Amino acid sequence: MTRDRVYLYDTTLRDGAQTQGVDFSVEDKRTIALALDSLGIDYVEGGWPGANPTDTAFFDDAPHLTHARFTAFGMTKRSGRSAGNDPGLAALLSTKAAALCIVGKSWDFQVDVALEIPRSENLDNISESIAHIVARGREPLFDAEHFFDGYKANPEYAVAALKAAEDAGADWLVLCDTNGGTLPEEVYRIVSEVKVRLPNANLGIHAHNDTEQAVAVSLAALRGGARQIQGTLNGLGERCGNANLCSILSTLMLKDAYASAYETGVSPEQLTRLTPTSRLLDEILNRAPSRHAAYVGPSAFAHKGGLHVSAVQKNPRTYEHVAPEAIGNQRHILVSDQAGRSNIMARLALIGIEVAADDRRITRLLEDVKSREFLGYAYDGAEASFELLARRALGQVPTYFDVESFRVMVERRHNAMGELVTISEATVKVNVAGESFHNVGTGNGPVNALDSALRKDLGRYSSYLQDLRLVDYKVRILTGGTEAVTRVMIESVDAHGHRWSTVGVSANIVDASFEALSDSICYKLYGAGAPA
Image (cartoon, rainbow, N blue to C red; front, side, top):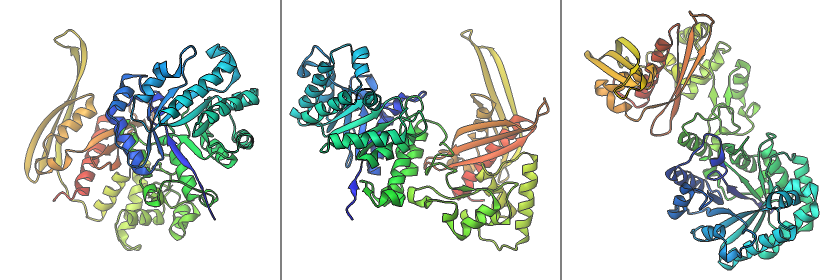
């Protein structure tokens, strides 16, 4: 059976850059573009040349892509100018982008109110812009802005906008759900109707996620006749984001209903890079991955209840709809006060610890986990701390260093410029293989100062810690009042992109932080094979 080819178009570098709090550098864009190319995405949109200095600089030194078509985004020519004399089109054509995607109005209301030009003139602008791109040997794509609202208000005019682009030579007509409010069943109906009216057109879909249905909308458009899907890594985008290409790609390739009918340009081997690519974006943005994201989230294949774990061990498909390895993710067996022996054994097996099920140390470990969680520890989100706890119970983790004492001072004062500043300084005394080290560090807050002091000099272990970074820090107050018990969770990462989380609990927030910090360092040393 012949499968229809679906083309994937990534807009992370433009739509993603419109996300609140996201600000890509030129180098960030280059790294992401190369990762998307390696993944097998068909089109990588670099941004809007001329719209801002970053995008202009990025296109001036565009990355070399081996698979994806590098694409520039812009808009149709302005009224009152010829296509050859329009600065926006000139900026697009000045780039080396193989494909040019231009956006134009397809909703009569927008033409009347936003552009304030005759509707026929808008159609002429679309046609002349596409024809100008075709004449200069570039691949033209037309993004029909507000298409679904326009179609519902005036289907004849919305289709006329598409027809103007098609007749002028546009390779793709992309139907945009610009405000993200159209539901999947509406999208399916409208795309199906458009396909009947324009049977030879190559249709695409560009969905926003304002109703949390952008992925469903994209798949509905596919069933209706669209063969290009636009979206972003991790669903980045303005407001509530765009269609999440991670979920779309995984569904297309791993769910039988789609995999049997459609094919993409991504190979099964490339699909295993999806989770690392998703995490790469989060790393560039300096934020923790969305834990519960479908397919690629750290908890997407996490199992906590004892009955669930037992079932997963016998048949993973009981609670896993796809194999986590197919998208480069992995199964996580969580350990908590809800855990039974099966959780402990399964978790140990996942981290490569072989031990007999009737080993008395397993019973003691399970009791230790439950008693510590009663005190406030949470190991279902701090798997590195659990691994250390388990390996210590089994006598597998050496004592790399002993902390003799530590002290933290926070001082608020005026500096030499007369500015009010707060300075944190930490002092740590550690013993490494009989050698004493007295370290002092400063930082942006007491935890950062402690981290700086603890890692400043650990003798023979210092070289193992050079690429260790703390990337997330969470505090939860477990009991009320000034005597509150505090739980601190720290997430760390190394140069290889390996992330791990550790936990500390104490009535003193600094003490809890120091415990989590120490666990993070010990986990790094153990994983790096540091000698005892």
